[in-house]
Image: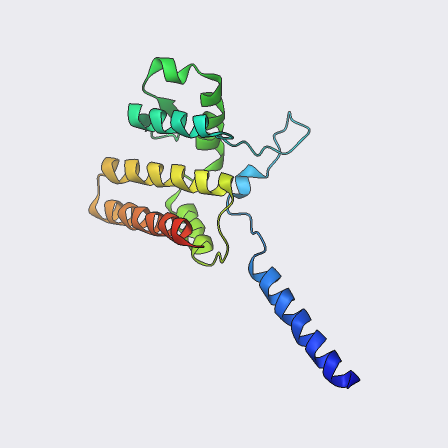
Length: 167
């Protein structure tokens, strides 16, 4: 009787550990965990913390944002650009989301292997990376470059859709 209970407890333990290991959080955006030289605590800004912030993000995206060739971020609407919350978005877009196509494909690979739902800040950053990739598709001059950016855009879209439809 005792060995049977030990086997059952052992199997239950392995099942729990497998489930926990499957949902362990990998850093999808490593730049968010780096510390700034002037700061004592790690930099991990997020844009939205309430539903009104989500509306503000939507309004900013509809008004138009621009990434220049160096990766600098700007909001086209001067009134929206002057808001304090937009400064967090500025930090996220300039320092956290990946800008190189190789880094974006690494993110896509990590997202495809991610078994759990994305955290709020990871979802937000993935969405902003999608916006960045869309702008790169529109601004690409070469066919090969455009195809690579378009592929990254589609894969990011699929990752966001997967996260939204996962229960």
